[in-house]
Length: 199
Image (cartoon, rainbow, N blue to C red; front, top):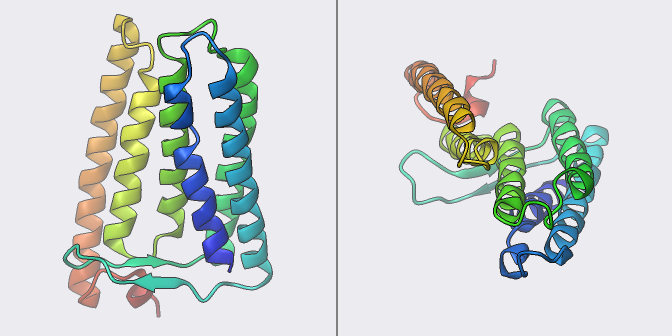
């Protein structure tokens, strides 16, 4: 139950910016809907994580066609604390954005920012709940790419593009370090599951 609540939160967060893509550029209905979905997703995620703190979940372990990968999610006390922070801050940021980044004042990039903001939130939540290396890397890449696209929303400005490139280089270097770490983990344990690395 706790895992499915958090997954529902991820799905709602990821989908929060999608309906607004079909709203008229000058109307604010899309941003209100995006914030509503984000807050609903955050509530699901926070409640699920809170339940996991009181009673750690058994986890979800489903097959996945990716070699060495499984859709394995487990929310323990530590990951639950991160999930709560991710969803709480993301929901507050979305609410704040209603006044700070109004669609009527940013008709070119308001909808784009809300779309990638929601996807970034879902990627971060997946990242801290993943119980398999391949799923962790999927969450990492979703988060990194969505964060880059959020950061460079105003891509018509040169300084914004330059900052985005610096961020992308930093995330690529971090990805290489993760590859090295997980390769060592695989050598030591013989598989890509985090549970195998425990005592």
